[in-house]
Length: 502
Ligand code: C2O
Ligand code: CU
Ligand code: CU
Image (cartoon, rainbow, N blue to C red; front, side):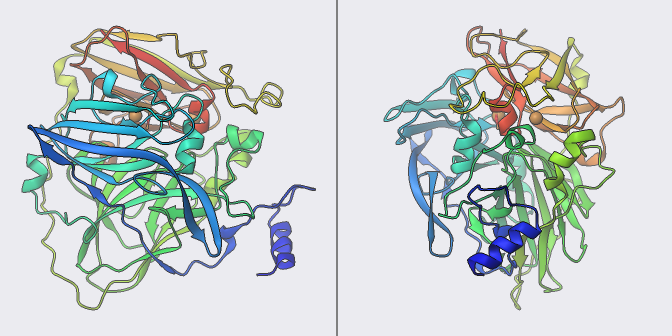
């Protein structure tokens, strides 16, 4: 497409802003599945003196997403994103992190139940040229977790440029189940992100008020860092580890022919049994494992559908227009099964027994009120260095402050955390320290597809969600854990708080 046609197309789609340099709009191009899906390398660690040791180096890189143009990116042991860490429940893990960037960063293990000093949050900064070691015993149900930068005020941009990767945890139970589990063959990670590009091929991060209010939305989908990917199944059944690693966009995954699939898990563990679905809505930070049957050998596409008008997560009022991006439809992955498919076992009817934290007795209820400034005045002209601590987003009326502990939780307690969303848009609420259970959504028990351990939960506009959380371990009266919105621009702009377990 020539420059003039491109400009006309951009004008026709309302993307021109007088005088500004035009971004490419790759989303408008026909998606054909032109590039083989990249599979992040597996890093299983080295066994030394009874410990499982991993080395991660954070570095700058160049990635070729667009033909003929290089994109400056960040990566871990590579140019963009990082290897998939494979951990096993009960192992003593030691992860060495080196920072090869010229700016401070961190690596946080999202969803893992680890001591605050090993969490990799904003207090575990790795200075440029410096290193950091995380040591913890893996105490975790089998599932799909992830790691990413958590640098204060810089998380959104660092993750956008590439500082994220997947973590696969195995345990006794998962090893006994006959599930597709041959990584890269019938067990396939899908790290889904939306990005946008400048004409020179560089990523285009926040450039407007709207990018912060709505969170950064791109027009181009990358899966495991692959633009316009295809995947060729070689087995009848394939397990996909769906991971919404976008900064702000909610995806509604579905197949182009409407076929159903089996949901196996939520963020941090299996459902009691496989649950048939035709759509799966994932907000930023959420994961879900699914199994899809390709024995009919028909080519099909994984799509992201527009958010339904009646979804409880649909934005209201003026936010509805700002978040129109959530109403776009995307081609995510072209799937072309090979003609000779290897046999797959039938899915086990029972996956696990999901216990209830409720039986332990509930010690306390804490309330968290999510709020945001709706006017333009405070936002405009204040950003630039990106170092502001004032923030336009709040929890219980406060923007995040590194030197303020917001909540103190007695070790050994079980609590209900009640999150109320007082804004016009959905916020995916994430709590560090471990997994929780969704207890009530607007007073009702959760639907079956939320009945497993989770660490990130959608709270739609006006909704009240209660989660049950256990705080059995890792007392540390000084070093806090975080809770925050996982729309990274909101997190960076104040929608985060700190708690200690003591
Ligand atoms: Cu996914 Cu506080 O992080
Ligand atoms: Cu986290
Ligand atoms: Cu938010």
